[in-house]
Image (cartoon, rainbow, N blue to C red):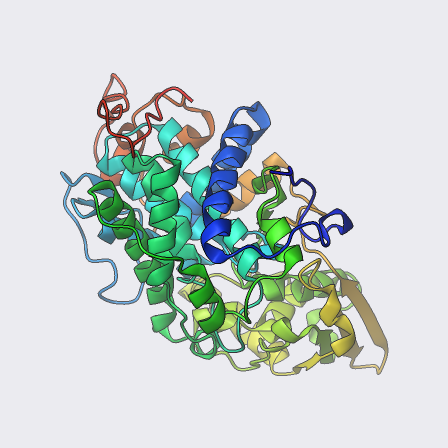
Length: 492
């Protein structure tokens, strides 16, 4: 096998691989993702990156407590094995815990992703990894490895499958397989078992509508919730001997994506270096397609007070131009509205926060400006995505003067990275919203600093309302002797 390195989309990738049959690509993709995750975690910097992703997604989930749609996160009980970060207590159903966590992350929307993969591998991988690791009485080391493997596998699937068909939302698609990979690691599957779980997960992957998300329909949260729960369930089935199936990625490529992978896509998916260091982190809780418009608007705010804004026109690429609603109906719709993000950028407001008494006046001012924002598709910017998210914001003030700002990247992109302190500040801000439980700050600190050998349930105990075990709880459970499809993760 010829090693493949370099960043997705780099010229070095072009034309170096033929499109292999689906059944040949997927096992190599999974093996490459596992190897990349292990290589990443063999370094201090890689471990730090995995911890940062875990902390960010944890902060998103706990910040959603009290804000999920009715019925999605009923309270659990204190003695459950799997923590409900966005609800009270815990549950003995890991699939339920994974679903609630995934839905919660999409409620807050301040997560991370890989731009070239056009999706969020961490959202699905983390929710499954957390539930499956706690279910197995695993330690922090197991959580981080499960997250890293799920992230690397999911990102590679996004690169392999490429752009989605018009009208399809990415959540619950190949992310289902990212969840299966993450849960499979926590459940002890070896690399061959992970490949079977990933392939089976692709047979039940979702292809939900994108338009309802922009309208603010709560059904949006079911895509990551049910996709992640299905991925975890499939991993457990493989662990318990469920038969493998034939190649499934091609079906998802035909139904949810735009056709079979190109040679360039295959090469990008099989790159041997870790992809997690290329992750972007959102600075605020809105769709990533809105972030460069928000970034450009923030720069204009230095020269134009909000009260002086007459009209705004945003020129951007096709995918972002869909986020054009000037009168978003609720928080979710605002998170997928460029006019709302631009208005908040001009006013210095957080565009992703929930409704509340303290936000009423500020939201009214933002709504006044959002109504004056027009979003236009500029075909000349289409080639700039996914290598960036180009946006041009043109503002006319009440005196008739024109002001223009451009942005290709947002704070938190790998090209404009946030410092460790800035990332921690975003996490801390999420915990200051109404809803996060007592113990959330302690959990984030532990994810950043605790030894890998500490029991995960020990770390999450304060969020469940329990006192942590003074001994750190039980250590990881090694694989059963002679079980060929399991891997002992205690010693990596």
